[in-house]
Length: 151
Image (cartoon, rainbow, N blue to C red; front, side, top):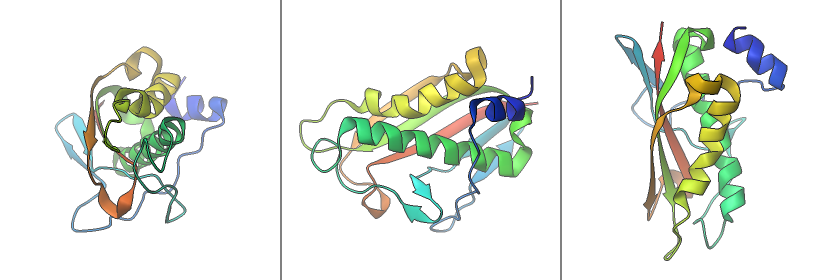
């Protein structure tokens, strides 16, 4: 089964590639790797969450936003090489705008990681960093970068 067929089976539609907010491109291929730029939880051109996790945004809300970021990262890969070219997810880097004392960054970034496991199965198992930061662009609670291997 192809990844596009798997997405269809799961009822998941990839969004349009998010228009860059500054001077960068959504994804770049070098050799057999595709690196995405940091993806925000943008849906239909609108940021879907704002504030600090642990104060303005709950960990569960932020986890759902991380899933949106993951979908946007996959859309960036798809826009460059096509989703079916992916052979495995290599690494996920997640940033969480954290209120003082919030230490649940790994649980938040699980929103993206679990999405990749759901879609790609064993090929979705990846290395990962989940980092707490004081600020993210546009006051978003979460940002996700993705590195995938492609055929």
